[in-house]
Every structure is written in structure tokens, then in C-alpha cells.
Image (cartoon, protein in one colour):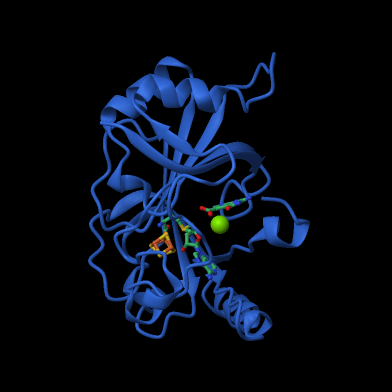
Length: 214
Ligand SMILES: C[S@@+](CC[C@H](N)C(=O)[O-])C[C@H]1O[C@@H](n2cnc3c(N)ncnc32)[C@H](O)[C@@H]1O
Ligand SMILES: Nc1nc2[nH]cc(C(=O)O)c2c(=O)[nH]1
Ligand code: SF4
Ligand SMILES: [Mg+2]
């Protein structure tokens, strides 16, 4: 199995439970809910995606023939001589189209702590240390258990109530960012009000966007 990677960068986790934590981001190419092409957005299952995940031409992207090759590539982005184990966030695109136990085993052999950002429609291989599922309207959630559920809000046909009984440790609402309209503030206000009324839910802001980092 080879791995197609759009881009790799070292930044802070901007969202959710680990917001503010330094991490290596490994963005896998391709998604099962959108082709990634603008002309297909309207007919996609997931229509609000803020990410370019097509191809392997991003910063430090490429095709990696083996899990060991990918691990060696990722390791160079962790600060040398750090006494903290490398923390990697597998994202995409949809990482669970490619991540397998061969990769999680190779990452653990290199002492990585592994987090994943997934849409929850694909089963997870063994060996993930932190599972963050962000469910999408009109999909079947296969991953009904995990560490963090991060719902982009509002999605008119997927209400928080429909997912809040799933077996997760933490529940977040993340305001839907829209590049075409000026609804970002409105969505943030709506998410904030929902959390105040329903304290099971915490607010997740995409802090990397206002910090101006990747
Ligand atoms: C680009 S996705 C990649 C991982 C996976 N495919 C998923 O959807 O969870 C990473 C995170 O960004 C969130 N996201 C994508 N587009 C967004 C938007 N327009 N506003 C807020 N969050 C968004 C996703 O819901 C997910 O939590
Ligand atoms: N800083 C930063 N944090 C993130 N958390 C989830 C991201 C993603 O695109 O999956 C992301 C991202 O792209 N950048
Ligand atoms: S599932 Fe994730 S990567 Fe795929 S289109 Fe939606 S937000 Fe983007
Ligand atoms: Mg992102």
C-alpha cells in the first residue's frame, strides 16, 4: 500500500480539544464525500469543505511507497532534541481511505502519538490514539465511538441532538466557515448560543485562521 499525501506541515492544532497543541499535520489526498473540484461542489455530499486535498502537489506532499518512508518524511518536521514524543494529526481529504494498521504500527515504532480527523464514514484501523469525528449530513456514521465529536454548525439536516448520544468523550460545535458569504459571524453567534443553552456542547473555533498560520 502506498500513501498519497497532499501536504505536510508543522503547526498548532487549531480546533477542538487539542487546540493550541503543536502537531505535524499529514493531509491525505482525496475524500469520499467530494471530488475536491469546485465544479462538483453543488452535487457533493459534503458541500462546505474549506480544504484543497486534490493531488500530491502541496507543501512537502508526495507519494510514499511504504509506511516507513512516510514516517521518516514526517519525523523531519518535529523539533530536534525535543523530549516530547511527536504528535501527528492525520487529516485530509478523508484519511481513513488510506490509513491502515501498517501505518499506525510504523508510527508507534517511531514513538508517534497519532490523532485523526475523520468524517466518520469509514472504519478505523487499530492503533489510533485520538479519534475526532466530524459527522456530515446525509451520511451514515460508522464510527459511533471515539474521543471527540466535532460538528460543523449549522448543518440544516444534521442537528446536534441527532449525534449527542453517540459514545464520545467531548462534544464540540464548530461554526461553519463560508468563503463566499459573510455568514461566518452569524454562524459563530449561533454556535455560541447553542452551547450556552446546551452545555454538553463546547465551542470550537478555527484558531489557526485568525492566527494566520497553516
Ligand atoms: C477538511 S476536514 C478533513 C478531515 C475529514 N474529512 C473530516 O471532514 O473530518 C477537517 C476538519 O475541518 C472541518 N471543516 C471543513 N470545512 C469546514 C468549514 N467550512 N467550516 C468549519 N469547519 C470545516 C471538518 O468538518 C473537519 O472537522
Ligand atoms: N492549524 C490547523 N489545525 C487544524 N485542525 C484540523 C485541520 C484540518 O484541516 O484537518 C487543521 C488545519 O488545517 N490547520
Ligand atoms: S468530508 Fe472532510 S475533507 Fe471531505 S469534503 Fe467534507 S470536510 Fe472536506
Ligand atoms: Mg483545515
